[in-house]
Amino acid sequence: MHTKSHEECRQCSRCGLPLTDQPSLERGIGPICDKLSTALFCKTIPVNRTLLYMGLVSFNSLDLPDEDVAFGKVTLNPRKMFESVKQKMLNKFKEMENTTSNGFLANGVNFNNEVKVIDWICSFKMSGSARLKLSQIVKHMGFHVLAGVLSGMSSTSEAKILFDDKTGFLTLEGAKCKGGKEECYKLSLANPGKVKFPTRLTKHFQVHASLADKFYAIVEEYWPVLDTVSSTAELAKAKQWWETELQKQLAAIPSVAANPNSKPVLGTDEGLIVHLPGDNIEVSFTWPTGTRKSIGWKIVDRIKEIVPMGRRKWNSKKVAWEIRLLPERKNELLDLKQIFAEHKFTLKEVTPSV
Image (tube, rainbow, N blue to C red; front, side, top):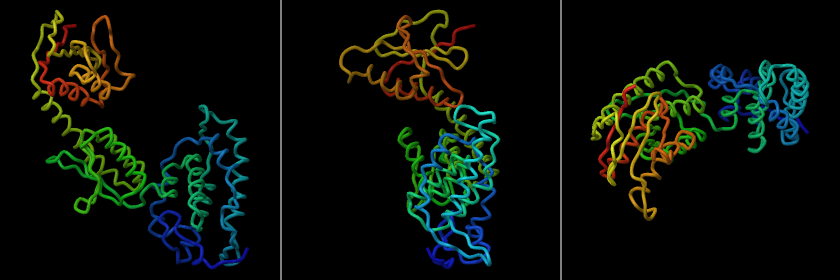
């Protein structure tokens, strides 16, 4: 063990740039990233006491640099600082036993001082695995947004969302980040053609208005320094635009109004949607026979792709799919109608009188 100068072993815990001035060295955070602290600390989740305890006892402090850093007459050592804060946190577990908790989660335990120490420790150079383990400890302490930044998964840049009513896409203006890219990739797999990734020309993520709520949740998680005032206003515009566009598209798909008092007999190329109270519908068509490559089986597979198992059920007595639509997933009705339109089925719609 020996004493190193600040320049040899210190970097901003959030962005990784070198620390040079004295206030930044004492904080372990650069002046620009320090302005983001409020946004990173204000969003918290309940403490996961089980995973936090496991993370603390399994972390080997030998993975931290054993370097004394002098601040005037005071000398601090990241390895010794972690051992000290670890003991304080373990002592607080006794307090957790007396707090109102839900399973593994606990509320009412304050780790503000301890998390700042770990944030400071992350300003020292260490292995990627050690940094990841520390960020997981921070997450289980309840500071999930800060944990994302410390692990390098979240962005530290300012960001805002804009909506273009000509294209119907939301655009995120902000630096790219690993975690946000991964989540947008997952979103694109489930919604082909509705997620555009940054290119040399666009340089930004773009997501269709029909996925506005899901996209905003991703942005809030991985771009914590988001201009929420302007972005929520743009989000509202996108949702209103999609509501109008959805009605237009639904009206554009041809359908025949059937007698609400009697269920029509369906031919082999006809489909029926019965609108029931409470955002519920019944989707009927002649049950397919033959190989899995037939049109009927393709319709069955598409219904299973669109509606999760918990919200669809095959009723053998009615010979119909019973489907529960969610208010935020109104595009599911459009997708179901498009299935029949794509296969040139005559679609009949019924709204029974109450």
